[in-house]
Image 1 (cartoon, rainbow, N blue to C red):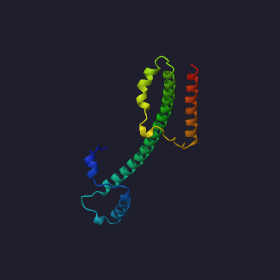
Image 2: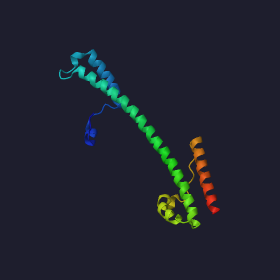
Image 3: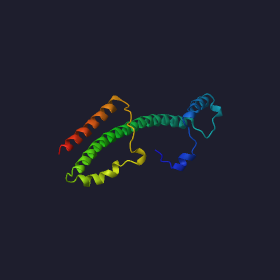
Image 4: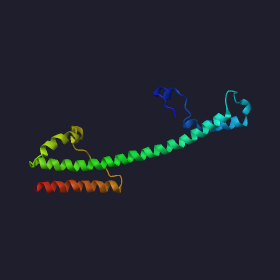
Length: 154
């Protein structure tokens, strides 16, 4: 494997998607007309390069798909974690209002993570994109509501 600097990546000519047809056409013509192939070019080495390029392209596509799945999983987990933290924060807010020991200290630390800017003081609720999102939002809202109600009874 080669490790290229950003400068090398920027300046090297690339056989990108828009030039894949060049690979097919030029390779076919080189095989059909070997008399035009420069003496310094080895068709055997070109075949090896093409085979490795194809294998690496397949691996890259698989890794991109895996990376996309990892990022999606991280996003989902982060969302679930944030919903739990939001429920906890709402519970702490209610506890601090009622003077429960430690509530104000916790609230003072967590407030910076949940502070809204004046521009987003009343954000519009995001539309749920799937049944799972709707269910999660409903469960989270229910958990926050029940936690708040339980604390109000204290």
